[in-house]
Image 1 (cartoon, rainbow over the protein chains, first blue to last red):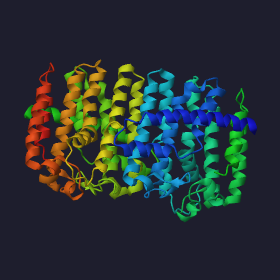
Image 2: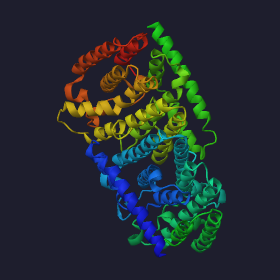
Image 3: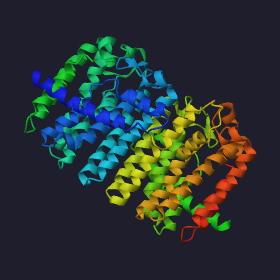
Image 4: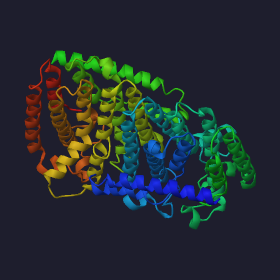
Length: 293
Length: 293
């Protein structure tokens, strides 16, 4: 997939520039430890899947990257805040993230709570700034806000916490956790550009986002069993140890791989209903299915 | 102050109704523990100072309470999230809030982190909904967002954490903590209505909010020494025990009372520069100065 990798490289390079500007904007932020802790988690790597999805979906619908830039940034800030809070001792208790010590390991749990709060707040400051540019932007911002909130990502995190050590297999619960914890923000990454285009391919992109989110979480769970720390940059084997409610825990890793293949096909099928150059998004599905990190 | 207490009662009764509707709107939120933990912290009392300030400033400027309702709500949600996170073991580690067990004592620290995140997110969902109603509302929402963020309240919390056990008296540091940790959101409560009125008395209300916020934090610190758990509903004597950087710790409680009186006069003086019925806000300054809880 040379074209895919090149385009991927362009998108991520572009996003790193955007992030650099955002981080430079924190120069006046006091105390320094606050700015530092925000920058730390934003700059310890990450696949930038959500910004890439925003750019690629925007381009597919005829919107240039500049026009969706702030949405890409806000989504990555929200994602990063959720990881900082998720890694806290009282949550997933993970001392590593992206191969480096987690935010709370470096700055202490108190500062990590504030770093997460700060990033979420920054994301909304950015979205509110966009609101001045017209109604479509307000609608897109509201969609992202709802996806991140107590009817979206936070609901998924809460259910994830609630069902730790729950041994009863319940597809409904699993679906709820996956759709919200991971799916909501991934869906927002492809639906926000659609809203900016007056809802173009809204239902297709909603369905695509939901399936891709599920696929992403499924491969995450598979990697927790089969991945290695060197590639993943975070602890493995943790789901079982911590009694997490995952598809792998409930149905076994081999069944989950079959399921992942089915969902990947479903994603590709949904994309076929969209006119335009869908090749990048199709390759991205394959990339998510086969990722090692 | 019979008029003041009656008006205060009207404002808070009004706000409790607004809050009741918001809480009822969480009925569909899953898992139930998430909705419950949000409702718990919103409904364990609280003086509702920020919503009252929003209403009273709105009315002073000629805006009816309905028109500022959502801003009052958003500010109280932001305030409540900050208390939940502030009470966490890694922050102020306070097992009591408003006479009841803190959120993390009831629901566990993990759920308390999510409850705080959830309330902050809800506040922004409400503000984004307001944005559809015109530019003044977008500006007011942006002011609140900035006040709550890494150049406002979160900066203050971070500095507060940083200067624990710091024995060197530095007025600049103290000013920074008070202005941001407490002052920023109190200022936003009186400035947001001004922005809705095209910036009417903006500089007076900014100055008033800053001083009132300082007064509020100063009386908070005095009460930490002189208050009792029965009235305050939270642990006392904690500032000294935890080495908090407070005016009382640096200058002693008697000096702080003199300072509080001076600031209260300053607040009243600023209000004199505003045409209209300033009596409620003047009485509120006195109420803050002499409060026992």
